[in-house]
Image (cartoon, rainbow, N blue to C red; front, side, top):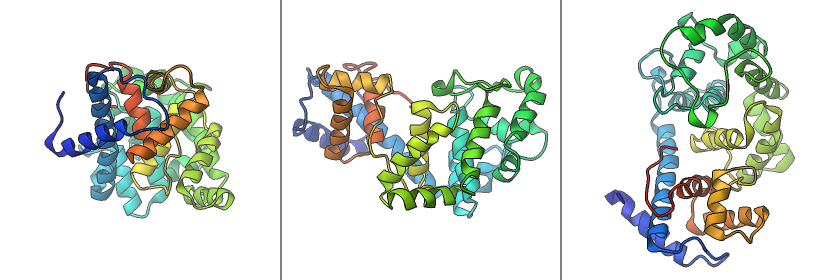
Amino acid sequence: MPIRNKDQKKSDQFSKSLDSFSHAPLLGLTSQDRKSVLVAQLVDSVRRIEYLNMTSIRARSVSLYTPYSGSFQPLGGAAALHKAGRTDDAYWLVFLATHFGKHKIDGWNLTEDFYGRFGQGGVWDWASASQNPMAISHWLQANYPHVTSAGRSRRFGNHRKFETLKPGPKGTGHALATYIQWIAAHGSHQALIHDVQARVGQNPKDVFARLYRDLDQVAKLGRLGKFDLLCNLSNLLIAPILPDKAYIAQSTGPKAGARLLFGNALSVAQLETACAELAEHLDVSPQAIEDALCNWQKSPAKYIYFRG
């Protein structure tokens, strides 16, 4: 399997660290191929996190958050907005990117077209969206026929493929309204973070855990949506948070990967603990464990590159 030269050291470290992991038997590593594939998936997962870290450092251009500029990229745009002191807009754009997802063919078309109001003029930035939580619902209802029949292909990402722009309680308008209402209850995104820190302290992992629970107030996110949103905010260095665990309990792929690695005898709580201990032992984010196990269980003995 292809390991880039600059990743070889990391690959070797993961391989040795797996050999010395003693918190729980790694029952799924029944062959060298299985171990090598898991290592490669770990390297890929860490690389994806590092890419967002570098995006946060490098992103500055206004074009990154300007729809139809030719350079629109919502996660990079959020990082640039954060640098510009537009904190609410930075959080909001990460949320939109997470809600719509990146499609493997259409890319960020749906996020860009929504944010750019389908080219009708203006943008759905935080100031315009937060004035009235129902404004987006009304706008989508008026524009829904046009959205589905005109313009370029714009589809939700793979992890968001069951979402819809249709009006109603299961649609984007309702989901975005619940997010706006959640933030409005605190006054701003920064105030939300301060309020949570006042309740749980400054530890970034404790803040992540509390935000994860509080996101139950936002419709249509689910386990993966909540986890991805908070991890994106963390990896882009927008929010002072770090994942405290892999949150595999309500997952499908990651939990299957954990069972494949640690065996069926462990309870879900024990699997969660084992994943957290493995992340600490390998010195990686629990997100890397969640992502790598999800991809590894799809093809444990033959490496396949997944874009995440």
